[in-house]
Image 1 (cartoon, helix red, strand yellow):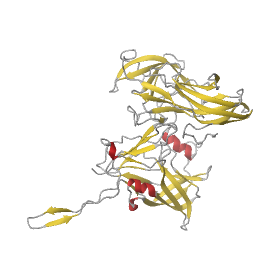
Image 2 (cartoon, rainbow, N blue to C red):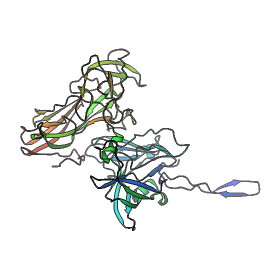
Image 3 (tube, helix red, strand yellow):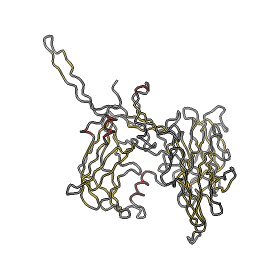
Image 4 (tube, rainbow, N blue to C red):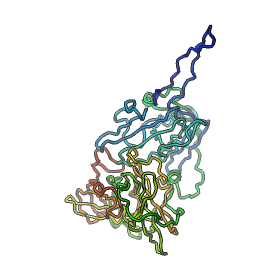
Length: 506
């Protein structure tokens, strides 16, 4: 069997019997390389952001897969172990897999330094050189009529910092634009003008994936221009790009459908298993009065609750009055995805605050800052959540869903203010993250002494939701508070080898 990852291989000449008296040798046509760079344009543009003085663009280059699916399994065996990457050559025979070099990949999102980018000015002088990563997910273009009709792999690389596994892949004969993914546009310190950009695959990846030299580098003319006037002048080019992928958690059409089928939790049925990763992206900040005067010291943090188990978490809310409240029901499913039952699990409320403006389920997660002895120092005021698939946590799990329908904040069902019904869902293998910029993702530490504490994140804190077990619902993250009033500090020891870049390490 031809290996999945291979270089350009030429078939040997075959002797064909043409007549009984003579034969001719005929060389087979060369096969496509496993991966190749291509561009179908001669010129591309990048927009110059006047705030950052950086030009942003996607280079109009395609990375095209060859005749075989390209599938990589990425695992973190433990937080204190390096990431392992396995190229799947034959799903029926694991002995044919190729394991990438140890420590080549350090997270679950990208192949680091996959590309070398060199930008030259009109004189031919190289003015910018960058090493760029590659997210293999997100192939969105069939490159030929015989390519598969659908892409089974994730649409992006959105792994949580504390994720356990991820799935990367491209169908055969599909292509992706490497720099059109979220947060992966090239950012170049260039002025307005004309340039030449050369993108090439780094030497080690050429060897790993068998990419011949003639398919490993491409050049394109690059024109740096002023940004087009945005639809919303308050958004920067970076924010517009992010909004294009995520979108707001805003108004979505409701289905206005009451629960159907048998009420109750099916005996022996499939259930989610809710879990929490350690808190992350931790820093200090100041609370302010209505006049903007700092009056409190805060610790801000991000948190993620995710779904393991063998069924999604699916909650629907139904409105009975003109009050901003809904009754919430959890639904249950069989292996074919058919609804098998439902049960009342609390309620939903409308949240009118900026960065929200949607319906929140009231009992999804809870946050506490714990003293050394486990007693509660501070409890967060956060109590309600819009449930959606935002982060990849364990996409190699037995029941994980690679391409959920409500990915991230772009396509969600958290609903607008006038909705009569709202659906919220989290699929197996995915987590719902609330970043530190969201309201109430914080502890008020104004009256908390300096010292060592733990941030406790608990999924399903009151047991309202039905799941396989509540024994694994809690995570802990150590933090060390310091500084003085008005200038508090927090240092955050890593968890094994995992350290979020924005955190101050002790």
